Image 1 (spheres, one colour):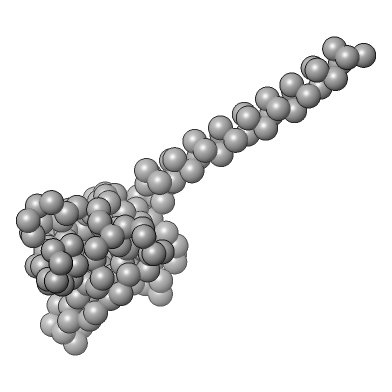
Image 2 (cartoon, rainbow, N blue to C red; image 1 turned 90 degrees about the vertical axis):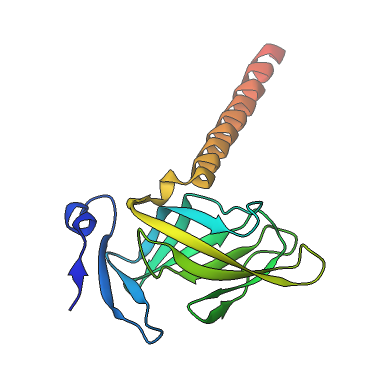
Length: 176
């Protein structure tokens, strides 16, 4: 039987309900999101390593069949895999872009140990990190900086196209 958190009980409109489910086979608690499948944003903190690496936060997370999966984007393109709860995850990014991984969210509001393998130091090195996902930061996908940038570009394009059309008709009228 799942026990819902206070955040889950208070958050019917903006963020998905969150319940801690029974322990999975690896012995860690899996987070269950009692909401519609979809995309949301969540604040994530990274600790460990040399302190030079970072991850994008807030980050996108997807709820699929009641389970949450975070899109972790590193500040480097040198990460070639991550290990989360004993499972190996390969990057989903395009060649030459910063490393991106789709990983399960195993816990909220407490550090989760992960391993990330980097090739930045010549030979590959597995580095221990912790990721902390904050339940009180869950919001709509539109809160992500990337989504705001897309809206700005769309508005700029509309202004440019509108200005071009207006300029065409003004110049056409002057010629007549």
